[in-house]
Amino acid sequence: MKIAYFGYDPLSSCLEVFQHLGHEFTVIYTGESSSFSDQVIHFAQKNNIQLCFGRPTLDAMQTLIEQGVELFFSAEYPWKIPVPSTLKYAINVHPTILPQGRGMTPLPHLILKQSIYAGITLHKLINEFDAGDVLLQKPFTLDEDETFDSLSCKVFQQTPGLLFTLLSNIDDYYQNSQAQGQGSHWPSITVDEQTLDWQQTTAQLLTTLRAFSSLGTYADIAGKPCVVTSAQGRCYSHHFSAGQVILDNKLHITVATLDGEMCIPKKSLFWRSLNQTINP
Image (spheres, rainbow, N blue to C red):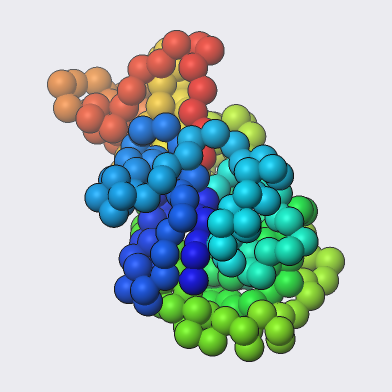
């Protein structure tokens, strides 16, 4: 089967499933070289597969069908993919148990407050984001200390098995797909949600850090804006004001919280300009 693949590195594990089953990639759509697309680009170059960095258009998608493409497969691809009515299969991967958790940035939401919807959904790709009929799902639980990175790793590792199952009997799953129902849409993460509020408890601050981990969490330390990727916290009674720097040495900065402290390794701390933003 000829395939048009749309995706970035967080789900590049899907590529080898298609290759293992003997399918043919006609084109791979991804982003320009970066830490989010280099693995996909390397796979395409290694296997002499056409790469496309522009956004897909209806005319281009129609041309792919004329070239014999039967499946559009989307895995961590942020742009809308026009789906011609003559396409045989169109499938998307979504990292929640749909219909709950539609939206562009569900992983931090899962850690912050919606863990019961953790899992993977393979569903039909239609012109409305995350709304197509469900083909196959796999729920999983979050660990107590789950982070954005560990959750991303779970999705990366467990999606190929689900995809292999689907492709092994794709016609049956496609014909017996289930409509999603009403469900919920989770909005994009706000800057406030991605910021450490020193007026919160140590436990709340650590949860925020876990929800973003290597993506980075905004903070203000001694009046200076920064991004934090990890920290350790402990609770105890003290006389410091929340947000006050208790210790600053070559290795760590320790900041007082409402009920204890956060010790931030300087290798996990990045000073930033006021207008610099990060995105999950």
